[in-house]
Length: 159
Image (tube, rainbow, N blue to C red; front, side):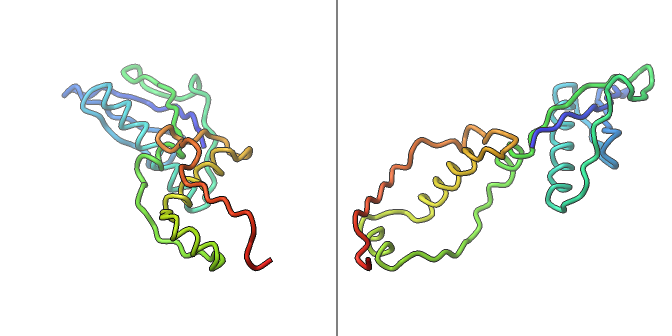
């Protein structure tokens, strides 16, 4: 999902920045300079939101940036974060899945030298990227061209 939240930036005496996100309790971070602070704010917000999504928690609505209270030495900046993109970049750990397919299909696929994991991954990526209910586009690194594995089976031997 894509979200936009206002973040409050304060430049510290050592030229670092302290960042807080008033709408997300406990969401604070800091950066070594302004560019780092923007990156760190985006990362902290995405991490906070991913955790809330994972735990089925209510995600607070974003406040109007013009209504955020801040001191004169602070400024408010809107931060756009995409939790789908964040997960793709930070949670690419492979997990094991067990699946069931007909024996005749398994035999043909193995004879064709098909990598089951690659085919399943490509099919799932294509399916979720074409899902009309998706609120966020799939990150570019996960967009694939048509599968290079095409198993054409004209007749099921059991039918």
